[in-house]
Amino acid sequence: MEGRTPFRIYDPGGVEAMTWNSLQQNNASYQQLLAENSVLKERMKGLQSLGNLLEESQTEALRLRQKVEELVRDSEDLRSSPSLLLAETSSPQTPTGPPASTGPLASTVPPDNQDLCQVPAQADPQTGGIHTPGKAEQKPPGSETSSEFEIVNMEEKMERSEGERELAGEDGDVSGYLNRLGSSLSVFAEETNRKQLLAHLSRMAVDFSRLTAKVQRNESKTSVLQTLCEQLRSENEDLRRKLDNDIQHQSRVVERIQQENEQLRRASGERALTGQRRLTAPTVGAEGQQSPEVPEQAGGRKELEILEKKAQALEQQRRELLEVNKQWDQQFRTMKQQYEQKIVELRQRLSVSQRSLSGQEADRDVRQRDFDKQLLLAKTRISSGESEVKELKQKNKCLQDQLMSLTKQREYQEREIQRLNKALENVLTAQTPLFVAGETGVGAQRQELLTQLEVLKHQVKIFQEDFQRERSDRERMNEEKEVLKLQLEQLQSQNGLLNTQDPAERRSSEPSARAPTPFCPGYPVPATHRSPRCTGATTGRSTTHPRPWDSGPCPTT
Image 1 (tube, rainbow, N blue to C red):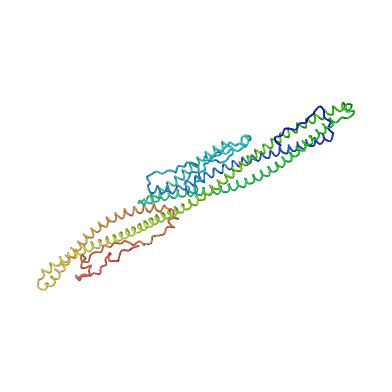
Image 2 (cartoon, rainbow, N blue to C red; image 1 turned 60 degrees about the vertical axis):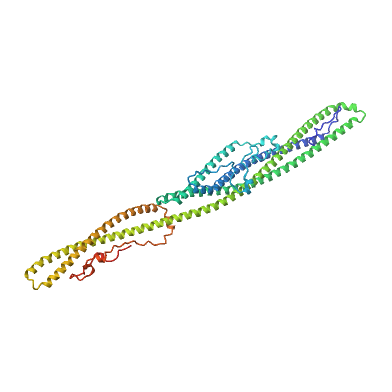
């Protein structure tokens, strides 16, 4: 039917005039064809709006593909973070950088999923789809004739390149965070100076918080991607249903137009045959009647030519519509295949990203446990340092109390020596009159005085030795006091640094199990060096005088 030529009427020299009813029928059919033509034009406008909707869906698919590439890049960087941490902890001086990627989807994925991830991100500028370098580009058959459906989005390419540069910057930030976190962990494990622990802990906390924020952003992007995939799938299904309905309706309209054209051709053929039969049949008096019917036949012939031209124009329009419908069908099928392929690829990428996210969550849990262990170790070190500070404070206090008791003992011994010297002088002054009075009754008294004198001399010697010993002990105590003061200053400075730590972490840290034992060294005076008066010897004097150093043991807090 499409290959037929327009129907022509053979006119051997004259045609009988068409009746008024046939002309009215032709005019009615012509008006009906014009109305159907206007309806078809309106439907063509609807198809153009549908093409605009398809273009918008293509742009949305491109944007969705960019988001998928972003998530894949983030998953690659987060997956390569454990190897970076191991390399930095084993050799902290070796500079490590982010892994080089050969394509937007090149990553360290399992061998089972290598064929799914080896799909480079190259947008087809004509159809907005994705094609691989390993496969030949499939151009739609109607792309040569329907150039109005070709889409070249240079602005989208520029935006995609800018987004890729921003993603590369974000990936560099993530790798930098991971490098700093690994170096902080290695330095913290090898650090022996307690002053640097707080700075390392603060840096590790900041890096870890940034890393967790980045992982949360990746999770939010994944959820947004899932919702966008669902929306795109629903929109594609709606558009597919609309296109199917329009194509079915258009096919019905085309069939009806073809049937009407066939009916018109048959009617025109029948009229031509009847005219020829009337011309060939000999009739009497036809020559007399032919002259007045010539103008009517000429008018009917003109109208018939006009109708033939209109029928040819309608046939040409019908052919154009059929060609456009074919092009639309081809375009729709190619776009349908492309969108189905895109949906399959997006689902595959989504499954890969979900698996990578699950692996990243497991790695993050392991790193969190290691970080908690490091924090517990630091807290135990801090608690042990605080207990040592308390012990040194108690030791310093005990030494100060002992020093005070020794100073009191020295003062008491000096007063005792002065008193004994005075008593000795009194005894020596009282001894001379006794020898002058007589030697007869004073033998026993003299002997007693001599013994007392010897005892006093021994006491003076013992007191001198005690005084020298106390002086040496006092000097030694002063030296120890200076050393303890220096240690106390160092511990106070360390305690000040530790007090700047977060109070919540200090409250959560468990106290040390062992209790600090107060250090209170005693310096007792040996019993062999004490005077008879101190030891309770019967030297003729009372031993009831109290001594400050015999009041009891050193007080402890």
